Image (cartoon, rainbow, N blue to C red; front, side):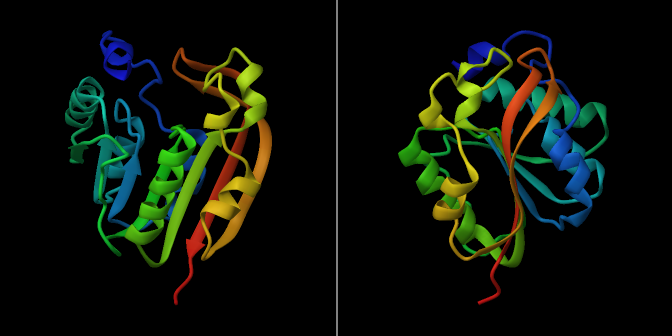
Length: 196
């Protein structure tokens, strides 16, 4: 599905970073892991800030487009082609993790969140934006199945051991390529992994 979606010449989610990431990126230190990276826009943005970035996605076509975008902007990203259900980011490997619209089935999401927590160093930051269940009935992007969406309560449950500095559900205009366009219901998280 994702390879087919990305196969067109156009970057379907645009080439600019997610707005929530752009606003808070100065708080991140490398190395940074960006999951569900798609066509590379967020990883390339972070690399442009001088950060060491690993971008992971399951779609080879998306990664190829990310490589082209990075080359066009003169930055380096380490790309990893992997299904998120099988990806192992290691233990205390990263200072930051970015998860932008990484919607998966609930069992895969829970396992992924466990792995993301494990791969962060103490004091590391998780920055996440996702659609809430209220988005499922909208025609402005995101999953149609509410079970694939997230909420603050769900994320607090799935991410114990974090200090949630930002944890909110908001309505905002998302303009990120032709597939994320219009008013949307999103959850935004900026959380710091406990030192102990």
